[in-house]
Image (cartoon, rainbow, N blue to C red):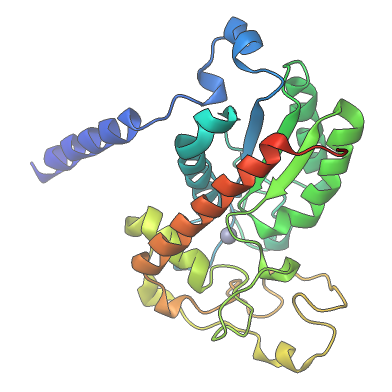
Length: 277
Ligand SMILES: [Zn+2]
């Protein structure tokens, strides 16, 4: 009886979610409609997620969900203003820093680059000239910066990379309490995910996992003047980096809203960006 009720409730909830689907999903266009709908002023928006371990307190889908939901919200709010077409999320990406964790899905750098180039080649058959990568997984960042130039060179796109929150390892900030090392499954990421999918978070198993000794380093540290190769279990066998223990959906709601606002503003500038005056 309870099971039947739960299933009914699920269906009602699903229908609510489905009715909110905005009308700027690229894949919802018919094949012939692409030629008209996607024009020279369109922005193609590719959300990139990851399916990778995020510690015991979070599911593997975190980056996929955050990238998709951010893209949904930005496109719903300014998609019509800037002619944005949201592409289907690239759910799996370059997560090989978590290769040690059984079950994590990951592409090698070579595969990831090939996929991005194949997507670029496919999209170059449309009239669009602007392609934005919306990256939900910090481990992709340097690779995607490389891809921006390759996509520009090979297919002529004006290319852009944005993050719901810039990864601390690449110049973004994280909380003082985490000593700037809320890198993976930490306070902010856990909070944003709690806002989006509260039923999938279990804070009772979360602990503080901040590699505090790195603070003593002048150069070799996250965001320092010397970069270093690391795997997510190098600092602790748990594989998450940060302190999620104080995470809350309220904090997540604020972070999410500000990310959507910032990104909407970014889209305005991207829509008119030119290399020369
Ligand atoms: Zn993540």
